[in-house]
Length: 300
Image (tube, rainbow, N blue to C red):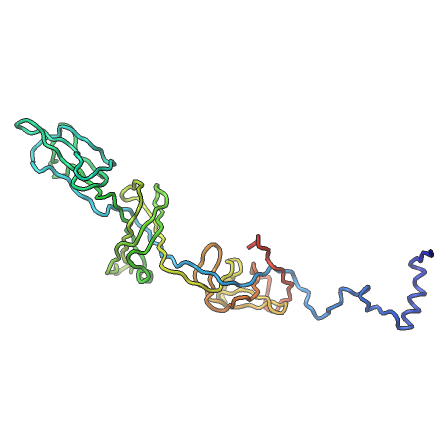
């Protein structure tokens, strides 16, 4: 077998070129020039605009209060406390003995809980009067251990709320608990234009009166086209996304709606299936040629 070197190929190639049997436009020599009309821009990561549903949430910040507080006083005045059976913070049942009072003529009578609940305050002390000089109650009971989160919301949100809507409440010191809209104010504070909302708290946990909480009330949901927050640019021209069409950048002005978990609802300006730049940036301008690279599932 004869081995040809590069310098030995020169006369052969010259002969072939003259004969028209070989061309410099051959794929072997010009593979990169197969489509000279295709734009050769920067590679950008893209994804398809897809439909998604967003929960419509109204947030209420406020404080925890007792829904109903019952004051317990002895039926007979001027007696002294002989024995105290409960302390503040204790849970009691209806009819449970809270204290015993000494009678001047001898013997004792009992003070019982009129309702079940939690003792929120106690002014009973052995040897002390059963009724204080200022007329304080002997005990205060949070009836049935029921609490409300009372807060204020803007008038634009009060129309979205209805009694019995479910809520998730985060209470400082107690974590997250369930709740339900119990009552809505029929008036608005004139200066702030805020309305009052009462959210009933459902939990076996012991809550502290006047502790702070925040309720998220789900009022419905909205379904439409969504893109990641990273695909949106905010500027003097408004809110825009960058779309890749025919290998070039197009800037689309959009209107946004709800947002959740890093996704933003697009209410206008974009259609399902549009190819969107995953991370929009000022370096990309209208008409720039780009090479679209699909985002991986892990990157979304």
